[in-house]
Length: 385
Image (tube, rainbow, N blue to C red; front, side, top):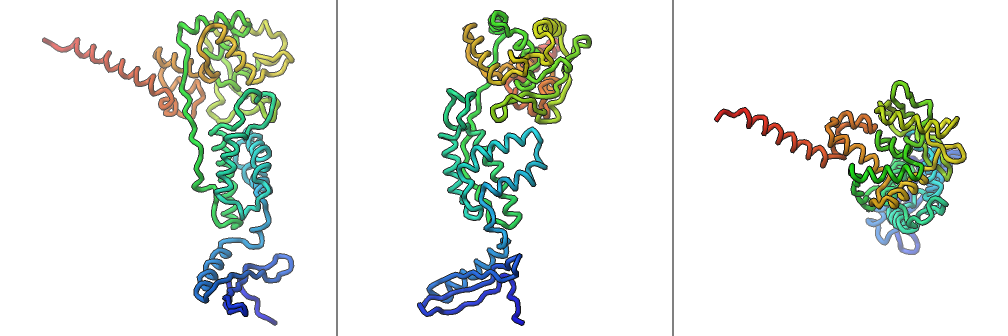
């Protein structure tokens, strides 16, 4: 019986055409048990010897029986179902599937996994930045390209999937490593001043949306958290509300979703004025389970409240700000008026007070300067002449 050649064994011979050939065993077919042979060619014995050494080293790092089994698109599905779906939060599943089905599969999904290169990824990212946005009604009027942040998110899940492929010996290296990624432009924080708030609230009242924006500025909730409030979360007698869910748009539909972090689940106290505003809102909505229902009785679309905000600001003659800037306004006013950072951090649902400090460093620095000046005045008054 012939001896079964082990994986990686090779031999060198000179061919009739004058070239040298190195032949080696790359593996064995798992079904038939037959050897899988591969070869390398060169002009000299020394060249083939070096190529053979490199090739054998590579096949020892690969599972040759599986290395050519997947396309990029097929591997992304395996990675999502068997790895990401278990590891990441359920609230992220839809986002990951959207990235895979809307962007990765249509653009690079047919490329064999082992042939994917860093250049393929760079071209893919460039295309996403210029024409990557999926045509949807809510995206009408927006730029055709995806944001730098979204492209970086897509790169992150690709990198994770390719890292797993490398660990499973399907590819030698991770082509996502070392890719040049677009820089995320830091969006300047804008806030409304107390003077501007008077004009804003007046216009919001006339537009019939006073209660929604008042509660936002009184609590600093994230947009999805605000829209996800139900009356079962609000205790008007005790004066508090519980943040238990968010509303988001997934695959074109406005749906309930769990919060993204454990810190986001929190209970917030309400001031008497805020309780009064919510009592008025309760009268307006009748039997709806949602604190801020849409005309059809379901939750309001996150896009709708943003467009509504911009209309109110424009009518009030105020500068255009993001919805998230209302959250910044809440935090800024709280810190400026003496609320400690740890309390503000808890109300915002941040994962740490350190993050809050970094985000609002300009506010806390000003407060520190004021504190130093106050202490200076106190101590100077105690110096005996």
